[in-house]
Image (cartoon, rainbow, N blue to C red; front, side, top):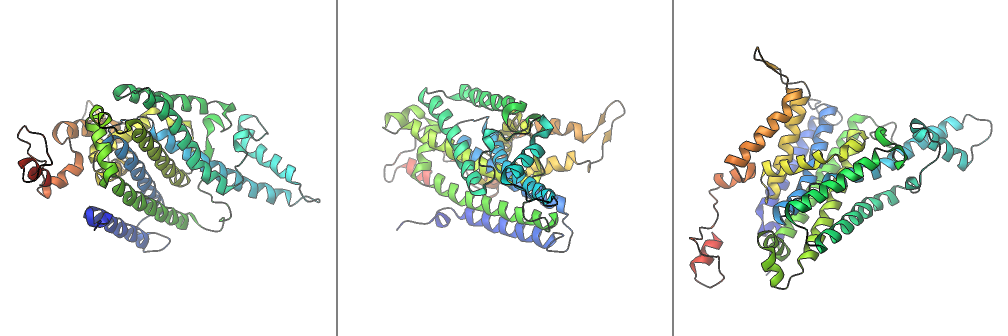
Length: 410
């Protein structure tokens, strides 16, 4: 009889239980629904952290399990933010314009409202017309569909071209970075239709919910982020725990042999690349309304490098490791760059953590690479006395009663 995901992988149940407990603690400690010892700003920080954990899960799937080091996945994350940001900004501006035009003697026409919205949004870049890319910004269902279609299609086209040409390794990483940089440079232009360097702002104000305070909205987004992370964890655990997961790990370890066995390696890699791009886009949809603003700097290649660093610190090839790494770095970054940690004055040198945080992150990454290559998640294996099979120089084999099979089951 086939076992379910939870029966095959008890760590999923443990993760979900811990996430549920964490969600309850934050909810009952929030200013909106609890004792108030968790501030609204910190609830937003925690909600954004959960979104980054979701993106890290996607990165772990494509890098830790499939062996594809993509340095461009935060581009999909930002695309998701732009797509939901367009609807948020359009709908919120529409409310303001309609309220202003309601004071006129004659009712405003649809064209006047549309023109007013365009002027309000694009006046900052010297335009009063809605660009073509905003054609469906008025519709939330269409924009949500585009969140899946646009990043998914971009990843599908890019991946098909790259994998069809059998680009691998560092060359593929460079290509993904080049894609991200090209997209960022395009969005910096005012005629990109997305307000250039100004980006999209005011995203924390949800249309139709003007009477709801940020304390409540922050908790709602926190709940949604937690649900998205839990759902993705369950789905990806099923993906990596089944036969599909065995194939992508085999591709990571020996691509040529998997191709020789008759598997369509390019199809597997293309599916994983597209799936993880969509997951990152969904994470961006939840992240930027909590951040309140998005601009082309969010697509900088360094953001995708940070994503890989989070997974490496947490422990790639372990879904919970990716979550641990992203949460650890995100919360430490918030702590050190928020001015809460006092500076250290060494006389000839003053360490101000706002400026030195990235140096500390680099040191942590080097130390983890040298002394804990399996990341923070690998420490759990040590605590639970888990170890890799001792092959004694021989390959793992399927023969019944063989030493290799016994080692493989340990």
